[in-house]
Amino acid sequence: MNSLSELAHVIKSLENVYILTHIYPDGDAMASAFVLCRVLQKLGKKATVIMGEDIPKKFEFFNSYITFQEFKPDYVVSVDLASDSLLSSSLENYAGKIDICIDHHISNRGFAPINYIDPSAAACSEIIYDCILKLNLDIDKKMAEGLYVGISTDTGCFKYSNTTYKSHLIVSELMRKGINTSTINEKLFTVKSQKQLNLEKVVYENLEYFLDGKCALTSVLIKDMEKLGIRDEECEGIASIPLRIEGIGIGLTLREKLPNSYKVSVRTSANYDANKIASLFGGGGHIKASGFNISGPLEDVKNTIIKTIKLELGC
Ligand SMILES: [Mn+2]
Image 1 (tube, rainbow, N blue to C red):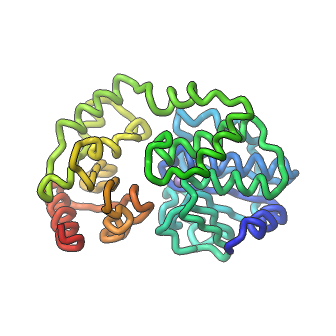
Image 2: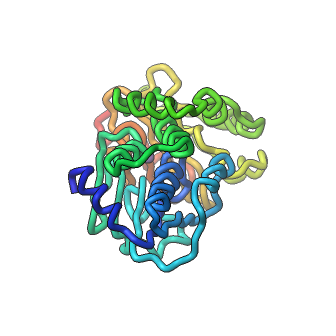
């Protein structure tokens, strides 16, 4: 499906809707799910967001966006979900059962019967915004605040290369609704807990350089997190650290999720393609920000990653 009008038409026709998103939901995932659900509820539909895990603390305010309802779904919609293999384990039974997929990941192959995928959208929240306009609905303050959280998160507060003039146009409209962007930015991007700063120390200490100084790799192990007493959800944002170093085109951040099992975040600048790198290991995402999972002893994992990148990218 290519047109927003069609998508809006489909959304209007839905009844009894479950909305799902990806594991470790970020601001865009949360915003897309909860704002879409709010829209459906405003249209008089039964709709709810099904979370596979606890809502991250900083996104708990999204709870107030919707009325949680219990019902059996007629439709399951996914937002910001690049592949149905990225559902959290408690939602795995929905894989293959998603009816409508709304997303902006370039790696998304369209796993649902109905797919609306726009990789030019900086955030899935931008698609939800467009959809609300197509539905001729008013954007209330909560929706504006939510969509702002979604767009600002996925653009790194408008710093990343996926930011477009349209992102700014949308945000200017959202600001008209009276949202306080500086307070949101402060909460989301500036203020960190002491634990998070201690975690950053670990990230800096574990930095290693490869590929003639073009690649920086760092890792955070379970034992580091235990020592710091930090929750998984508080580890967001560290993936951007390796790219802060001059000359680095590929930044890799390994987070040990289970013993010897790593989630690798790939961030790139210049002409390096993060989606291509992640796809070498069965993952994917965006051109400048992608991820994949890999298992094995840490040193082996690092060697494999660096060797593969060197071979495939010829760098
Ligand atoms: Mn997104």
